[in-house]
Image (cartoon, one colour):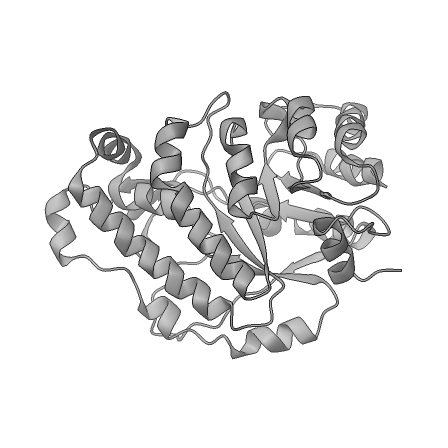
Length: 334
């Protein structure tokens, strides 16, 4: 029997894992208020992936992952509003809403220069699961958090010179962040940017390729040069740039398959990238029946799972999802 680390690597390299590997994401609400259900499911269906985080000095400001109702300032200086406990809020007071503030702005380098990464190797040595870094690069989302989404889309449309300066600042920050992680023993690096609406990319794919694709390529090349794998998450319909993620070197992509043409994705990209989940969490997981969940998994398996690899059984457990529906996902993958 393979270990989780061996199983994930076999899936990514298409070298026939002994079974489809598993991964489970749970939103903060589930971990806080439904922990008994979460623990029971993980005991029944252990995951093959483990995340790790560094230790931060107590004098470094870093908000907790679970935020109560109210507002808080993130480590980059923008203010978030939270309206439901356990549900991620939104930036309502971006620190760079006015470009005049850019002259006095700098990324929070103390977060990546003063954190303690030495414990990461020890955590990696103590598990036989595939170990992923905490989320590193999220350049598009960080720009939104700093400028506000509406401002950022206007910046992209008009090609403002300040945008290019800020992009370079954020890019250099993430290169330094990655360089530190690549000296550890983690197996893979996590990156993310939510790029899609329910039916299309948030910006013109041509502009995406001009502004963001070269940066993703630089990140992926750096990660691969250290012998590690690239795991990328993006919500929404990103079908128009799926091939670009393959080209830049993403090994596994977590995307909302059910917002896209799954048959076309299978036809074009099966065997070229690992599909890291998932099952429809907008409609099926919260509102479907267990049998509808199993049918959805069977659809994905019939298209993507031929036993050679290229698939990770993953779903995201949200606030309103019944435990029996999440269980049905992993039962169907067995």
